Length: 139
Image (tube, rainbow, N blue to C red):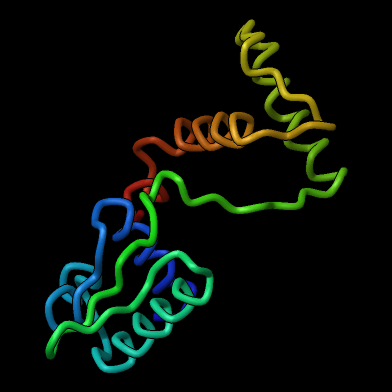
């Protein structure tokens, strides 16, 4: 498991839980299959440190237990993303072609002002495209 894999698993974990307890308590829930348990535990610990540095979680020890706790509700965690003009244009073209074909004016996309709503709709379209495929079933 890479650190990127670990961070992805932890983001998914924190979408449903407010805290992550020591590796012995929650490792098997977050990592169902492991080729090398110690290496995967190290990756998870590094992922937790990464989220801590990003100010998403705090680490707190209580007796012998270690907890990593969300600093705020998961749904309120935001990121700033910079999108170049060519990518914004492609996103808008793809979205708007779909909207025109579906006669959907609500989800039209302005390439000069990409919003979370635009990205969310694009993810919806991608999810619908892959529904039932092996790509969707592996996630």
